Image 1 (tube, one colour):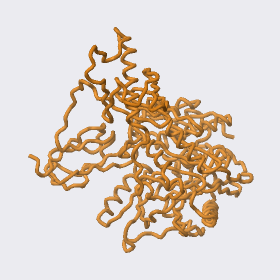
Image 2: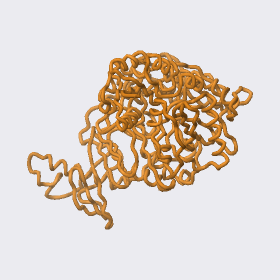
Image 3: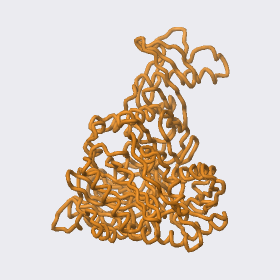
Length: 617
């Protein structure tokens, strides 16, 4: 019987596992890096063990240190979560070898599916449909994949022969960083297919459940963004093929615990992608539709329990992944001043108000999941919750998620892996003009509330008015005294403004953090950047400077001073949040200065390289 469980992970998944442990009366142990010392998962565990350092390789990927933490905390079981060491057979063997209970499949099953090349061979033997290996004669596009892991890490699309070596090397580096093994292989790329996976649960007594399928087609850089259960676009015949193939896959390797078998589906073609021998990020949609707790099932199976009759599906669930990323989809780090998501949704998060998001780990802040009797109800609930969410501090992908959920093709269930490439999902639905007016009124109210003298006199008051009072933001400019035509002020306080516009009453919450103004209403959130009347002097960078778009580590410098570069040529590569980001020359020119070297940690805005473009003096 498990009495004290150490979760060899962090963030959202650690908190998720702790929640089930509390319900079962199991004591919990967290591990944490220096960067995570104040993280919510550390505070929620009964005990916590520090792993000195910040990088995954010296903390969450260090098997010896994690086993030492088990000894220090007197844990008798280990749950790996997802990512990090969750699909590392050596870790599973080490845990079992230390006399601890391993909450997961056997090391042999992990090894069989963890090495993707061998996994394809085994699946073919089990009658599971697989893609053929790629050869250059087949042409492009092709997909480079990590042999030692999944989850989109170490995966690159190659569309032309001249890009092959570069993308293979990039995939190898990402795979090495994520899984400790840089081996890759290549498959044909099945474009515009649905990415569909089947949840399996199996005990050690031979019972295998297939708990329906999840659709995960909407992805960016092979990272899932939206998931739902069941899939809105497959036939009953295809569903039967998928469930049967998944069950055969689990039986072939003697699987125990919770796992996922992933497929590509296009028309009548069904092709095995991989089997993830762990709990998936998107497991909540299956839990809501089937009325189960997958973490509880994992723990009970690890204790030797038998599965009973599989539960039946009912209703529909949709999940979105909320990331800290900017409009260019680059990861962000810093403080989340306010993190509030209400409504009829489930929120599995790794952060809370006041949390700091570091540059060392995945930028996912939370998963937001809605359940309904039907798909339309689930989408409506999720859209409303995201629209009303108060997310102050870091830029997130919330607007993208709302735009996806409102997209007619998504609502019709017409989704595939190229969905984000083929749809323009930019822009926000909030009224920028009215939000800027509310911000201006709230800021004026704050100024009067904080005034040391003459606090009752309106800001900017004068005997003879010649010009309206203006508030200037980088995103908009608005006159607020007098109000624009059609507006009536009901009330204005530093944190709340109520306006009427042509008879329609509108309520706004307004907050200020770190030089930004956040305006929330039932129509969404608007973030504004006030323009100061007397701006502080700022440091200017030399023309032609290429700066770091985010905090990160320089992985490679590809140019030298005096070198001639062409537009689009790789200059250097940054690693941030476990992903590689190429910095390229904007146009043809000559490298005049290289200010960084391999291994250097840089902050956002750091000048990396200076290129004098042709024609510059």
